[in-house]
Image 1 (cartoon, helix red, strand yellow):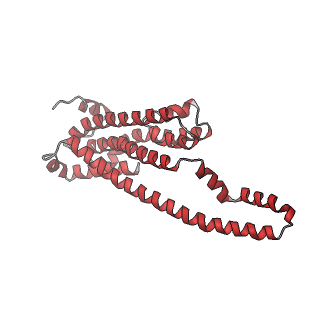
Image 2: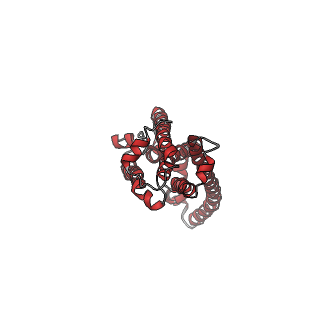
Image 3: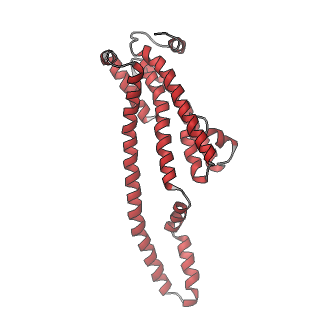
Length: 249
């Protein structure tokens, strides 16, 4: 939503200032559309990579500091207890330690695979939605006019979060499976399923469908974009957008 909106606002700004007319004299509309989408997407990807690196670094530092502190507290408590109860208290203290629970989760999770899948689903999912936002931006002349179209694009994202609640409760349910396969909902719901364990064929199929979904949406968006960026002084309707898809030339 955030980065897709940046693409849409950028297209609206270029269109209203008539800069777009100069740019498309040098490049094709589809090239311009992909360039804008990829450019903003790489900015978002860079931000997420920085957050991932900082999070991992801070987690390692905190775990070492906090782990030593917990270990020292356990040792002090054990010294105050009779030798016959040491093992019971020690095991109980370790079970109650928050860091031991975190360690168990991290050890049972394939962190590199989760990070790689996140980067893929973020970037391709972003490109899918940002192509739709770019098409909307080309069809309107202000952010106010874009609201009637952006709501339709936001519906699948809202549904993704709603279905993610069911996915967390039952990752192997039919709803969870289809939510992680449909390109409009898979970027969120597949990431929710991954820590619970997903067969390799489902992950590959989901990624393939997401790429195909992006290619289809970008093609449709480009058909609207090439007409919309040069259209001024006319309020666009859904019927008008449908006509733009079939314009030749």
